[in-house]
Figure 1 (tube, one colour):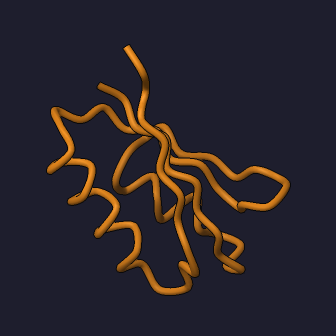
Figure 2: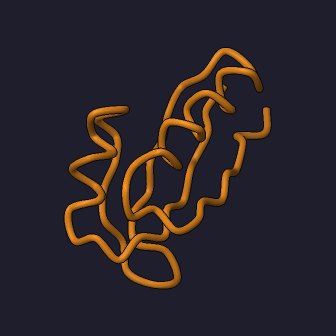
Length: 69
């Protein structure tokens, strides 16, 4: 299962910090500032990853989308 986590943060290097969680993280333009894509085993693991993202200084909010299979 794959999760896409959108991250809002005014920090310029937020994508670099997200790469410590998953190499599949990159900055984007628009309403959010970065995207993190992670492979997870279930909802509990998604929550753990989101909690880690939200613990990063400067993260204002996140929005998570799950791959539908």
